[in-house]
Length: 103
Image (cartoon, rainbow, N blue to C red):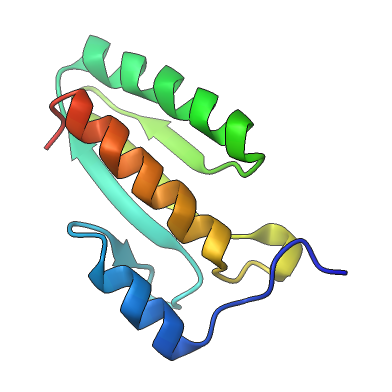
């Protein structure tokens, strides 16, 4: 049994509409968002996200910059395609980012 089933293009479109500020990669295989906040708060947000990822047993790529935190989601076990797990994690990340006053 696969880790999670890939979503259809329509399902991706519908779920993406629920996540303001998030976008698809050019090939549509990744869900991405870059948050802007000061460096130390960005690092703290990254730690918060790491805890959420462990809780959900689904992990993203995080890139910490000077005043940014970039998040990229895909489900490798589903052939590097988007699944409901990616959108569930993105929603949790969005809530955490809001709590950290990221923009």
